[in-house]
Image 1 (tube, rainbow, N blue to C red):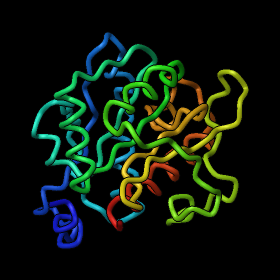
Image 2 (cartoon, rainbow, N blue to C red; image 1 turned 90 degrees about the horizontal axis):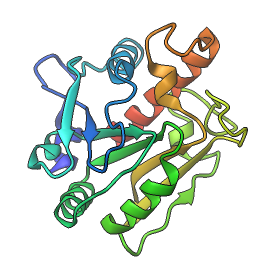
Image 3 (cartoon, one colour; image 1 turned 90 degrees about the vertical axis):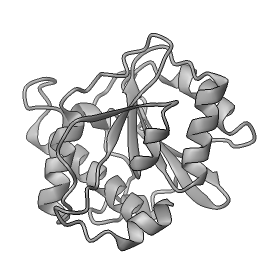
Length: 211
C-alpha cells in the first residue's frame, strides 16, 4: 500500500500527503511538542520541495486511519501502554510500509522499549551506524544524531527496528529532536541547534519518502 503511495506521489498540492502525531494510552503526554510537526513540515516544504499538508494531524494507535500516513511521529515523557489490538494495528501498519518515528522527550525509554516488544516480540532495537543513509540525505550528519538537549549528558543515539531487512521504526534517544522543531523561545534553543534538529528531521522525512 505505502510502496505505491510513495513511488507515485509527485508532492504536489493535489497529492494530499499528510503526516501525523501518534495518540496512545497509558497517561503519557503524547501531545507534547505541540508546534513541532507543523514547523518540520514548513521546513521540509521549503528545503525539500515537498508539499506536505500543514495541518496538525493526530491519529490514534488503534485506528485504521493510521494507514493514511506514511510517517507517524510519537513523543512524550511518561507512561505508554499499547493494548493487544493497538499493537496489532501498529504492527500491520509497519509491515505494510508505514514508518514510526519515536522521539524520546526524556523519560520515554523504559516504557517504549517494552511496548514495542508487543508490536514485534522478536525484534530488537539496533543502533544505526553513522554512515546510515538516514544521516546522509540531504543533510550530512557525520557523527549521527545532533545533541539538542542535554538531559542526563549521555550521547544522542539513533536506534532502529528492521522488519524483513527494512527500517520501519527510528527511535532517537537522548537527543530531543522534536523540542528543536518547536516554536522559537519555547526551549530557548540556539538557532544552530534548531537548524540541526530541523535538518535531521528533514533527513528522516526524505528517507521515508524514498524507501
